[in-house]
Image (cartoon, rainbow, N blue to C red; front, side, top):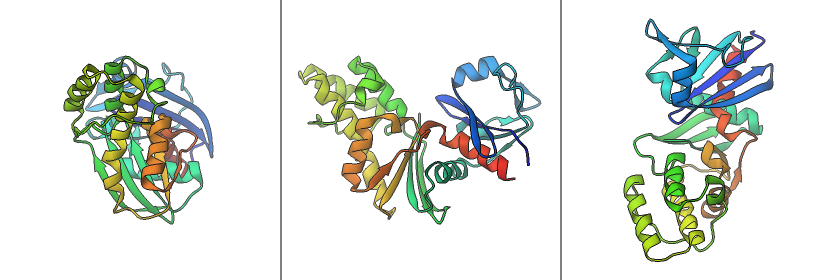
Length: 255
């Protein structure tokens, strides 16, 4: 068993790295995806060679990768595992739960996974539209001229936003701004729209507990609206955005 494993979640918006010893997190690092490829990775013989020393990780003994990027570029000297597997491993370890529905809203995609007795039994993924992702929230916060942190503080009295497309949603939001609605109601409307897209997908996933991961899980308003709309307990693990990277480490430590 390796004593130090690095898990790499190659996301579309950011790369998450976790460094673990059995079974303890040593370090977590998030890097913009473009910066990661530009400064720390080089393509050699069809694989991505990562300069771990430049990242300050000279002691890495084994690398396990997952995420958006693993399908296009395999890490040299590493093992790639499916995203769903990594996220289930991470969520079970972080929460200590065996039965739950995992809702992962990342930078550009979303995943819903049914977990029973610690194993995946059903799933639904959406990587074709960014409408219920972190990128949607980033774009909308830019339109509103507020930070993501501030956006996450609004959930009351939301303005109705009906568009199901991230691109058309921006135009609709600009129209609502022109109609004179206050920022608080507009921001609440953006957060409510995320939930309106997720709730119909949850109907085929039974259970009383949702584990909420991904960068969107940091949004307090979305967390509250998800609990209210689903009428289920919502648990956010200690490191929701690093869940996939942590799952990679756990896979490497158990092998």
